[in-house]
Amino acid sequence: MQLFRRVAAIGLLTAVAGVAATSAVGAEISGAGATFPYPIYAKWAEAYKKATGVAVNYQPVGSGEGIRQIQNKEVTFGASDMPLKPADLEAYGLVQFPTVIGGVVPVVNVEGIKPGELTIDGPTLAKIFLGEIKSWNDAALRRLNPTLKLPAQGIAVVHRSDGSGTTVVFTDYLSKMSADWRSKVGSITSVDWPVGVGARGNEGVAATVGRLRGSIGYVEYAYAKHNKLSSTKLMNKEGNAVAPTLEAFATAARRANWEGTPGFGVILTNEAGVDAWPMTSATFVLIHKQPSDVVAASEALKFFNWTYTKGGRMAEELDYVPMPENVVGAVHKLWLSEIKDAAGKPIFALSN
Image (cartoon, rainbow, N blue to C red):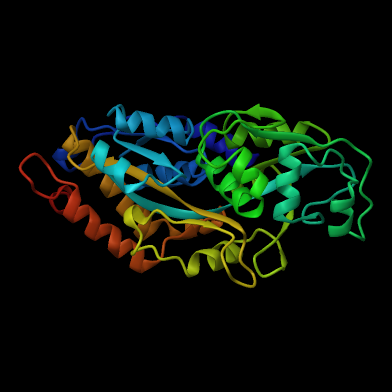
């Protein structure tokens, strides 16, 4: 909770402060979207303001709302854990690039179960969220956890109530694990949940699971760790029960075809690898190819360039995986070729 008290103290960081470069005077770096990266975006913003005097206003309103706001040019950049398809990027004149990689984890509040003790596989997780498995001592859970004493306690499902890229990752995984889930529910930012109670944002799901006995939910790993929630192990593609760790997230991301995928739009669910975590994903930033506020867009690119070069250790401290150097290089090329002012000059080149 200490992290989130500090994040709250940072607040929804306000407009750009005056700096030496005159082009930054009066600019405003505003962003909105995914709650998945909010802990690291807040930490980066705090450090960046100390280093440069420039502040960032990022509102963690969920991926769906972040996409809407950038489409309508209400913010300088949007943020989503669901990569947009090339046709959607083209339709709205947007560029998309990844910033960090993290893991989505199931979290539980079950009497007598400590963090990392419970193992779940994909088909069983799907049946829980379909409402078909209703008790913690169900036979399917007992088979996966033969040494645990599971209580005869009802399962209370907690899910996101807002449009969420975290939900995309979670439901994409369930769709790969369960034909019933794929046909009955599917995978998108906001689905028609068969059972359960909704909560807004990763922080809302974390808080609800934390206070609701017998519950299960899904959150980005930083929220599980810093709220001291009991995350589970998951059976991965290789048949191994793995815990959510930085290395497990990195293993899942290692073989991804980032540069060969339009918009870097890779979803890393059920990836191969002995130690790979099955629900891993990058989080993405969206910015207009021809921004209406060139100064603000230039400052935003400066900020994200700083996060790539200076923010890796901070990301790892919060259990995110920094983007590989080759991906960062490809992002820089994308900025130079796609994000331009009205005269056709690359904004990133002008700002450096």
